[in-house]
Image (tube, rainbow, N blue to C red; front, side):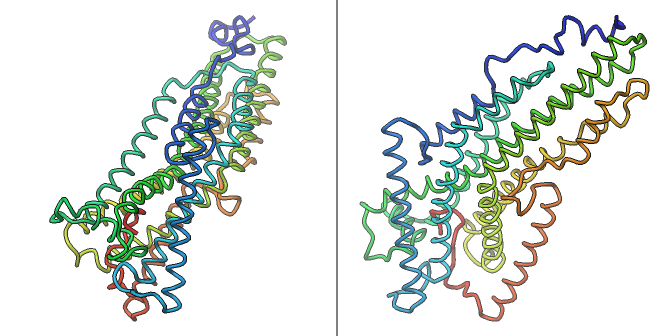
Length: 431
C-alpha cells in the first residue's frame, strides 16, 4: 500500500493510535514547584500546618505594609519625627511599594495554584492525551524545568546576600550585624530607639520570604512558557518529519491518500487544541504577567537612577550591589520575555515546513492548517494590554531610557532628593 519510507510512519496505525502517557513530566514538575512554594507562603496546600504558615506570612506582610503606609502618610503630612536618611519620603514609598508587591505576588500565585489544581492541569492532561498523532515526548523537559527553577532561586538568594553585605558593610562588628542591617534596610519603619531583636529576627525572615515571592512570579511565567513551547516544539518536529517522509513517497492510491488527509486533519486539530490551551493559560497568567512587568520596570528605573546618581560616590560594596542587582533584574526581565515570546515564535514554526511542502503531496487539510497557523495569533499577554514577544524588549528598553533621562533631569533641578536615600536597595531587606 505504501512505499518503504511511509511504512515507518503509518505501519500498525501507531501514528493514529498513539500510546497514552501514564504521566506528564511537566505536570509532575509544576506540582512539586507549587508545593515548594508553600515555604514562602503561597496558599494551596491542604495540609493544616501549611495553611497556618501561609496565613502567618500573609498577616506579617499586611502588618508591615500597614506600618509602611502609615509612615508615608506621616512623612507627607510633615508630622514624622525624622525624615532624613532611610526615613525619607522616597525611601518610605519604595518600601511600601515592595511590600505591596509581595502581597500581590502571594495573592496571584495562590490564585494560579487554585486554578491549576482545579482546572488547568486537567485541561493540560486532556489535551496531551487527546492528540490523535504519535508526537514524541520531550525527554529533556523535566531537567530543564528544574535547572531554571534552581538557577533563578540561587541567583535571587545571591543578590539578596550581596544586598545584606552592602547594608551592614565589611567593617561592622559581628555583635552589631543584625541591628545595623535592620536599621539600614528598614529605616523607613524603625528608628534607633525603636530597635528590638524580638522584631528584628522575624522581620529578616519575612523580608527574605518576600524577596522569594517576588522572584516566584517570574519563575512561574518562565516555567509555564517552557512547557507550552515544548509542546509546540514537539508538534513542529512531527510536522517536519512527516513532510520529509512524504517527499520520498512514490506509490499512491486512494486509500493512502485518504489516510494522509486523515493524518493531517489530526495534526490540525492538535494545533487547535494547543492554541486553546495557550489561551486558557494566558487568562490564568495575565495578572502575574502584568504585575511582573510593571514591578520589574519600576525597580529597574529606580535602581538605574540610584546607581547613576550615587552609586559611584558610595563605598565599593554598595557600588557592587547596584551592578549585581541591576544585572539580575535585567536578566529576569529578559528571561521572562524571551521564554514567553518563544510560545509566539514556535506557534508559527511549522509554516516553514508547509511552505516547502511537495506539490504532489498537497491536500485540503494541509491548506487548512497553513491558513490556520497564518491567521491565528498565539501569544501570552498582560491581561490583553500587551503581548510578550521579542519586540517588547526594545519597547521596554526605550521606555526605561526615557524615564531615566527624565528622573536625572528632575534630580538636577532638585526635584528628587537623592541625598536622603543613600541606599534604597532593590531587595526588600534593603528598601
